[in-house]
Structure formats: C-alpha cells, structure tokens
Length: 165
Image (cartoon, helix red, strand yellow):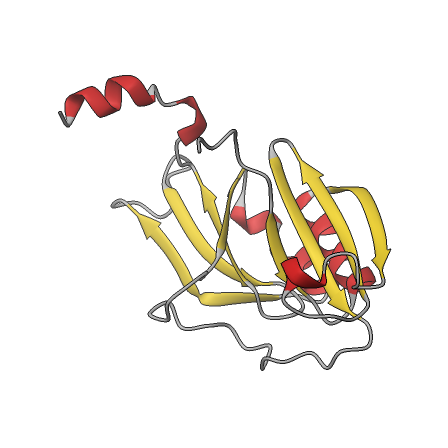
C-alpha cells in the first residue's frame, strides 16, 4: 500500500463552536464543512458508538478535524501533555510574526505560554532571528508557532535523500 498524501489531523474538543472560532480567528482557517453524526455510521472506525459533531478546517494544505462528542462523556484533563509523553505532542505552524498572535490567542480562549519563548541566535532584536513559542488552544492542545524558519515543503527531498545514501 502506498500513501497517496496527507489527509488531516483530528483533535478532540469540548465545545466545537468555540474551537472553530479559535482556529479561524487566530490562524485564519476556514471551515470546509461540519457534520452531526449519529455515531452508528462510523462507530467501528471511531472505536466508540455515540453521537458527535465534526468540523473540518482548511488553510492551504493543512486540514484539521475538530471532534466534539455529544452524548458520551469526554475524558482527559484538558492540560497540555508533557513533551516526554508518547504520542501526539503538538501542532506547529510557521508564522510571519509571533508577537502579533498573543492578543488574538487570548481573545479566542487560548493561552500563550510566554515562558517558552526561545530566540535562536545572538541578537533577540534581529528581525531575521528564529523565534519559537508555544500556545494552547481552548482545550489545552499545544501549538508551536515558529517565526523565520524555512518552508520544509519546498525542500528537494530527492536531493536530500541522496546526501544520506
């Protein structure tokens, strides 16, 4: 079986409408569609019967599916996972400017983890310095934002692979 391409990332949320607003208002996603599922149609796939709501968000080639269970208790603390825990740890987006996001994140119900700000290089005031920062969406999903980093989708993967042969 060959992979045809990336499909999406699924994120469980407590309040679908709030989370849609967060990703739309902060990162400029658009809602591609929304579904209300009885759960019977995809119970085997979800490994859980029950009704849920789903919204597929799109921005460029990034797709995020937000899932809110309707009649099933939601589990999890809503606290961010330690980076040392197995499994999914964070989303990461390249951004024009980290400093521009703080107000929008807070207004949309998220958090800015100011203590995680990292500036690579000798001069923090250098406008070309690489900056990294973690945010949390309204349900505690960690999101890394990165300023002045290369667009990895533009890398010639064949040339890169040849260097390591």
